[in-house]
Image 1: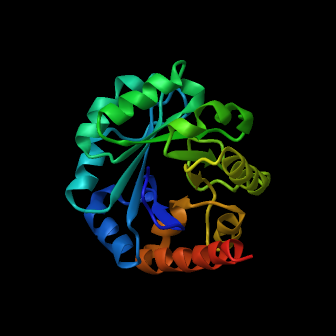
Image 2: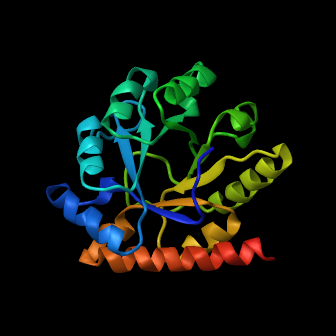
Image 3: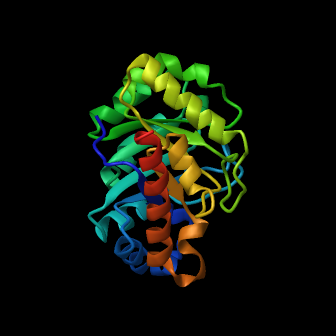
Length: 231
């Protein structure tokens, strides 16, 4: 089981200044970040290319924070060993890319990592029922993956609530993660809808005020999460 105290803000290193990766990470930690999210893109499953295990290894070398790797790639099973070796503590694969999803999740566990399953905005939540007991985390993409800085898809809030209902009905323990279009103006509502772990990229690393940006997101998320858990 994935152990964390929600709500968690996980800055996405895709939006960081890679020339100053260590400093950006340290500044995010000053703001309260305890997770970092690494978006891995191959130019096939999504229309963009990001980085590989070397970036994960570099991030891991300069922080003791939790390293969360999101594989937006085809044939993710081929790359699980190298990302685990690079320091990933959680590896998330897309339901849309895995023909034998249970087998892929077992491979992740065999390499000592927590498991995550991501789904795109156009993929039905019904597809998750068969794997809900086999994964530590389900990642709802709230934009179409591939590029940062997009606006959140409006239906995402209902999808988060629906996934939370599904988790309750199945009596499952997976964490709900969301990624895409997160900022201080909507993070409270996202947390209130049921998101446990919230990925934010451009709104963390913009304008040089990284620590303050992280703190604001955490404060807003906690306000939303507290209100839903006590209602």
